[in-house]
Amino acid sequence: MSKPFPFTAIVAQQDMKKALLMAAVEPLLGGVLIFGDRGTGKSTAVRALAELLPKIDVRPGCRFNCEPAKPQAACPVCTPPAGTALPKAVKLRTPMVDLPLGATEDRICGALDLEKALVAGEKQFEPGLLAAANRGFLYIDEVNLLEDHLVDLLLDAAASGVNVVEREGLSVRHAARFTLVGSGNPEEGDLRPQLLDRFGLAVEIRTLTDLDQRIDVIRRRDAYEADPEAFCKRWSAKDAAVRSQVVHARKILRQVAIPDSVLTRMSQLCMSLGIDGMRGELTLMRACRAAAALEDRLAVTWEDVSDISPMVLCHRLRRDPLDDTGTAPRIERAVAAVGAAAGAGHG
Image 1 (cartoon, rainbow, N blue to C red):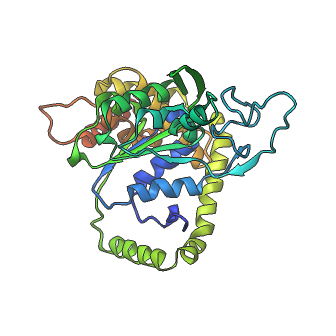
Image 2 (spheres, rainbow, N blue to C red):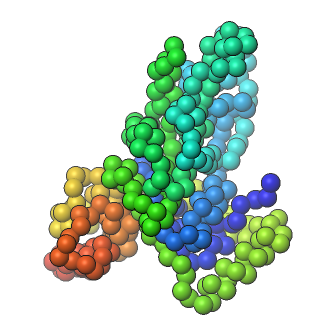
Image 3 (tube, rainbow, N blue to C red):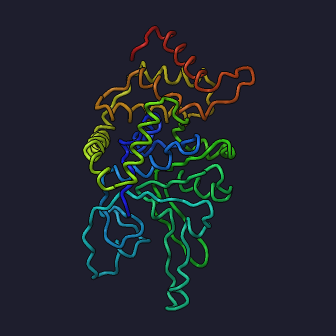
């Protein structure tokens, strides 16, 4: 199996790449929704991200991706019977699990292992996709076509970070802390509002219109398909630099300060736009902090808010029938108004 297309070799689409990196730094962001035209590199970027991230420590054979220091009761590998030696932890690639549209509830949540039940008479839990995605990413292509009852499952797990299975005589709880990444084409249907609100960041990408960038895309894709190993090797240094950037950002994330003046203007911005609830405001704060950490800064500025607000707030805006300019221009106008009212363009 060849390596995924390198993350840093993806041409343009800066908002998409920045959103994915912020989600990789701050898992509390709530994931990323990528909507846009077909063939614009959405799936390529998501799979490239998983290859880019630092590996995690897991015990061999563990299907719940338990942290070695925090074994889960549901995991027979990490919590073996007394007297059984624990296998030594190894480093594995960050999980990137695809959730197919046709997946059943049992496949997602896990269920009774029927083979063992019938052959050996043992009642054993067969982990599902939520267990496999723990400490990693759960990716849903064409997320807007996902059936409602599966959306409900994901909302419950994403909100609580726990998967609970209570059926067929089983009672199992295990961690399901994952970053949700969804992609889709808006022409094929809207996303259910409850699921839309769960995504911390939403970016819209379009087919490139710059001639040089289009040529770059063609050349790089052709070179990758002709010799994936050699192509990935050529981009490995740039990918490694971004990996180091993510690792460093994770280390300093909690040290990044948000000045009171910037926090005040964040709240004023959300109030002026009529954003429902507090989730948008909270996500904006976390996203700005992740962006500052990625740039090795220890303070959030108003420029961060100005830059990131569209990807945090666009999908939370109510439709204004009297304003047909689109959501992004409305946010840009609000950011400018709040900045001007505060008498500062800089944080």
